Length: 113
Image (tube, rainbow, N blue to C red; front, side):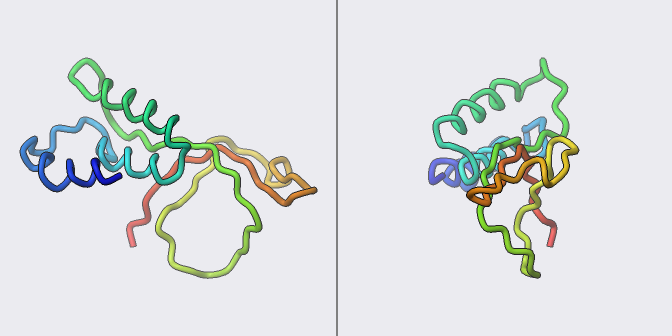
């Protein structure tokens, strides 16, 4: 994560916003490194960087990760990231009743506030 932050601070201003995607490739990398297995995150980041050129259309492409959530507590708090399910599934379909673990594929979207 330190290398990505170094790139954002010192090298990215030299490219003048050349990324074809939203979120930018460096933000995509930070989010993946925070939520995904590091080895898998590196492969996803490299694949994204290889697609960030004139041969691909670009656009909006949020990171898609598989999360295991345990002991979810529904209470008001500040939200840094929204975890949006990739498919429309019933909540009861993803519950493991024995260990109260929820496994789902989600898009990571940063909150505006």
